[in-house]
Length: 559
Figure 1 (cartoon, one colour):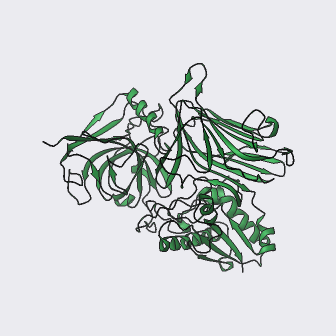
Figure 2: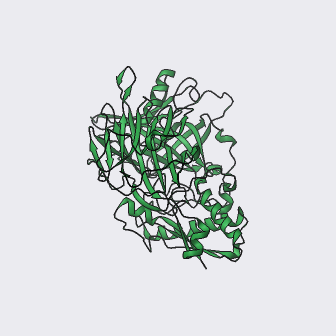
């Protein structure tokens, strides 16, 4: 007698909008799932096969529980739809399942499965929504289980069968029913343009830096390519003005950290960490009650620099502090720079505790990635949260000769006032410090080359991110001021993944930059050419996260 197994597919169902209609999708898994190998926190992505209006889109979710054993159980939550460059919050129930061989209601081993739908009460809905913070990023689960997105309950689908394990290979097909979750109704979304293309080559394993990832870098092939400038966001209207520094002095995205080892570029004290991976991201995750401390390797802080990090917090009110201290110091004196983040607010301070900015979060910054940035330039300090400038102060003089900062210390705060340690967690995805970027016009005039890590793209796509706007605006302004200037735009990747795929991607991305400068910034197309070199012409070693980050770049060459 074979032992029964169960797979619980959890999908958020919003009942707040009575008029919203469910939309039926057929999707195919982009990666295998198995109770033997899948872990809590692993992302789940599936390509839309039908309807045609959404064909090529990606529906995303996360493994919220994985229980191998005699009665294995796998819990999933689908919560977002990537459609035409827009992330749409959704809820979904699973209506059918077939393995990668097309066999209905069986897993890869041929074990029969059956399914049924269930409903949970509102309290359970909120509890499940909160638990989604424990996976890789929790980036899309912030609103699941909150009053604004879950009016009464969540729906669950339980699929059970027989066999020692449950395995679904890449290409397994699911039928799902999708409804809105605090956003637009999927049924009302415009169809994909005919030019939208989907990458069909195998997904290389390159890992771009989430917060400061430069341009071309191959990664997961489950995001549609933009299809050219016509599908790009309106970068002219973007209000983001943060420009990442160019010369990296410290960088870590934890891509060379082993799952059972501490992070190689940090000194760990008072606690333990774990690595959670998926969706081409690596997240260093720590769990309370340990009041963990991480100190980076030493480096030279430039006088003018940018600092960027991407972090995630659970909803149990943990806190996170970034301290920039001089060599040999990890407390006992005022830090040179201090960034404090908790679920309700973020604040940044300069030397001697001088305030730079403080901002409350609405809604709270839980279960979603938060991008923090600090830009120090000639005594002026600007603070950013998710690209929005929240503070801008001047005449903030930084000590240069007496005990300048040379490392970051990150500390986890686990105490909720009056109640002691809480079962909270925090995740760090990337940390980058770089010397501030030079002026485009002056640099291109003096050296004939301008290198930038501030042009960003969606994963495995030539679709530009809004954060790219400041650099593109600076290039357009430089071209306007110098009517005789002509440029070649070159794209580069690191060496991770398939070389031919990276080469093609770098060419498409360079051409996307050219197309946007022409179509949105009115640059004469005859003044621009584009080319891509993939992993060719590296400027640093590809053996470290720092080196790979430097190799992922866009260069403008004077012709």
